[in-house]
Length: 284
Image (cartoon, rainbow, N blue to C red; front, side, top):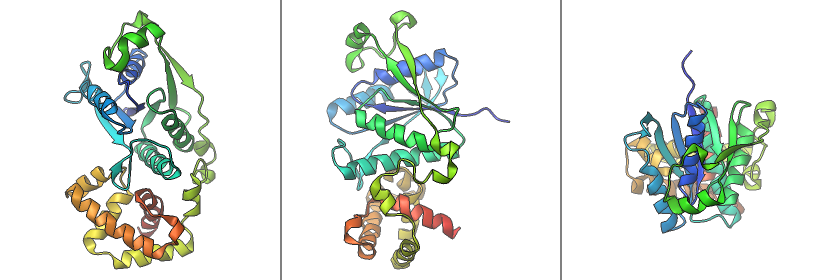
């Protein structure tokens, strides 16, 4: 039996040191972290600087001499970065991407650590909601306690690492993995209302078939890539095409969806992942 792969997922705001502080404390506990994945909003220069500062800690997929892979999920809606979460459509889009991410990581049988201390509070709440669906009892969520003096001296990434005696502590956040305990309810737990309204009914199966019939072979490939990846960048990489090409295909697909679904459905990329991913799975 191989060694399990452990991923630290961290919400990121303007304070990149929150992620390295958490990672350092986990490593000090002899947790074998193989990957760090940050979820962030492109909310301006301060956030971009924080992301770049954190990215600089993982040169050549190594962190403090250890092999740890770094990647990120920049939240998007309709192919554009989400700068903030203040509307229901923003919440649905962000929640859907986080939900897909956790689903894919658990499908890879990864053991997950979820750091909830960085970024917008709503971002942590969305991640916690998705964790209730996909976590298993061995997964963990964390909050980090940082003394005021350390917080002031480390602000904006001025310090990315501190001594163990600095007083930082990891606090376990209770998460009830309801999806693991009640698998039959997993599709209902924590779902945004707009997602529930777009369930894969027989009527929606027929709509999927009609949309599929209108698409060219390349547009069908793009639909499958968008449905089974987390970001449009990953979809483009899967097909070895440019972002502009995947965006062109996406607009054609969404236009067809708008013609076949009621006007209040408002199809977007999350809609494709929610509806067509299930429908395509049924076609296998």
